Length: 194
Image (tube, rainbow, N blue to C red):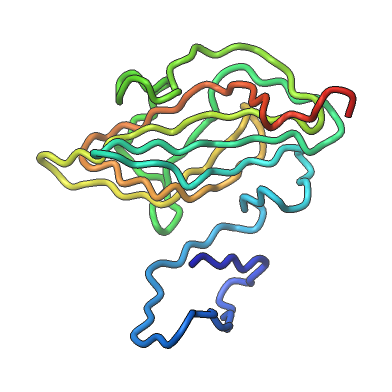
């Protein structure tokens, strides 16, 4: 179960109840993730001043390959120009930058067929339209200490306000995270005439 608490002040405590079916004992909180409210990803929340909502999906994993989608929606009133890749900063559990992780453009250096291989193309999103990108990595562990980083700070375009998402990167010892170029998401765009 996932529960999001917004606007919690530093050092504050949130109490609540989780509804479980039947009886339960030995319930544990597995992990708590916190993001500064100014950088919180709210895919269904109010439109921020930037006019752009950025979020990450739950992703997919198989045989050590991980793929997580980044989603961008123009919720503002002006057009948003995209051309290239989201800017990423990998952050540890304390939200400090992780050294030694190379962010590579495209997914080919990680795995083929992930949807992250198309070259960047310039396009414009009208209000209500959407775009997507893909994060790709392998959880391969060889010599050395594995890297686990829960947070990624995303800037949709150079100079854009950052949004922090929680893809729970388990990079193993690969030291690489692939990112696909922004592509138009026609499924997330409004129907013609709207």
